[in-house]
Image (cartoon, rainbow, N blue to C red; front, side, top):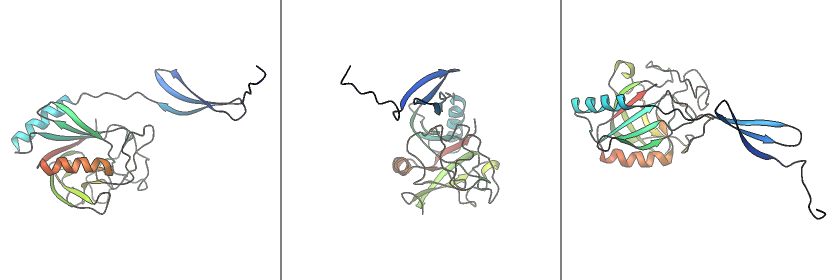
Amino acid sequence: MKNMIFVIGMALILSCCQKDNKEILVSKNENKTEIIAEQTPRIEIDYGKYYAEAKGYALQNNLNTDKFILIDLGLHSGYKRFFVYDFKENTISKSYMVSHGCGDNPWGGTYSKDKPKISNEFDSHCSSLGKYVILDRGVSQWGIKVNYVLQGKEKSNSNARKRAIVLHSWEAVPKDEVYPYGTPEGWGCPAVSNESMKEIDELLKTNKNVLMWIIKS
């Protein structure tokens, strides 16, 4: 058609294609095709055994039997992996992004987004696995200036309080999922976004002695 102009040179066309059951985002121009990002389907994990054990542990130790928090560091840090579980409804009521410790890597990076190093040692800058009880609300220098003291209840996290491992928010933590990118890594605290911490803070104001269990599935 005489009046139609086709602009080809600089135009980018985004398309999706399938390869080995993975969705790949592709950028095309007249000279080349470039893979921008590979979107791997989320792996659904059955946490039923953890919920059952957590409920029994809460009952035996006079902890909160309404709410429970499970953090799975086995998941890529670009996914939501901080889960608030409702014992009465038997369902996950909320999920959030959460950081883990950087270990030997530079603070604030995402070097261990899919393979965090775990340690209970001082100055390791690592996250520690195991059951914690969420205790007193305090003042933080990070995020919305609120933190919660974490008491490690197992050999694997017995140094939590001495290491100043607390639940707090951090501006660097995203609110929404960013996979295949990761969440910035700190010095071992489970840090969430400011928006998430506002919701978690309201939850913990009305639910005392909540069990938090950090696992690596």
